[in-house]
Image 1 (cartoon, rainbow, N blue to C red):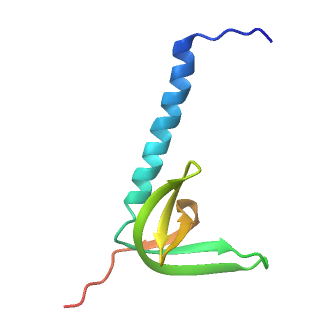
Image 2: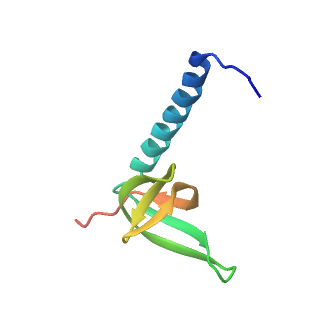
Image 3: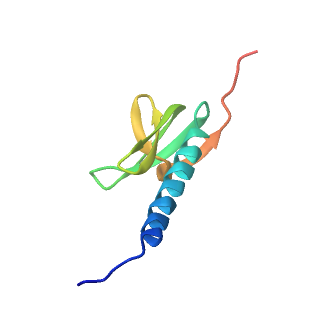
Length: 88
């Protein structure tokens, strides 16, 4: 369409995306070492809950994920978080 954009405006869009992604991974990292419960919708239309220790956080396709028992869950699927209990 011939529209021209100022390079600083384009950089501003990219900078905003980077800040958002970093913030999201920071949120996911905050769950590591805590017990979390996730709620996911199964293929059968029922909701399923998983509770376990969050052992890692990572970005996948621009979405922050946590790892529980080797499975990835979006931070949007977390419904409860608690400190882990230590014996003694």
